[in-house]
Amino acid sequence: MPRNYKAEYAKYQSSKAAKKDRASRNKARRAAVRAGTVRKGDGRDVDHRNGNPRDNRPSNLRVMSRSANRAKR
Image 1 (cartoon, rainbow, N blue to C red):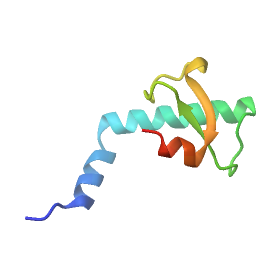
Image 2: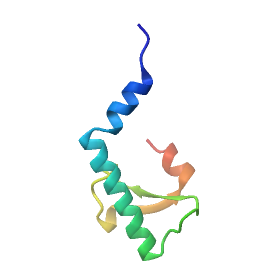
Image 3: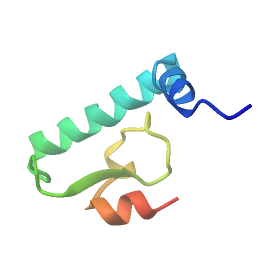
């Protein structure tokens, strides 16, 4: 039986943990916009140094290019 990737994606994105992580990443981005370090459409992401999206301490956040941030694992 083949995997149903669409159902797996929908199930993960609607989980409570995924929603909280996404909200925290959005909150970090909004804080960086207010601080003036990023702008809408500038092609940069706010990176969490330790990989924990809920850790929004200023010392844990840095701005980097979208391609570099998304290549990092």
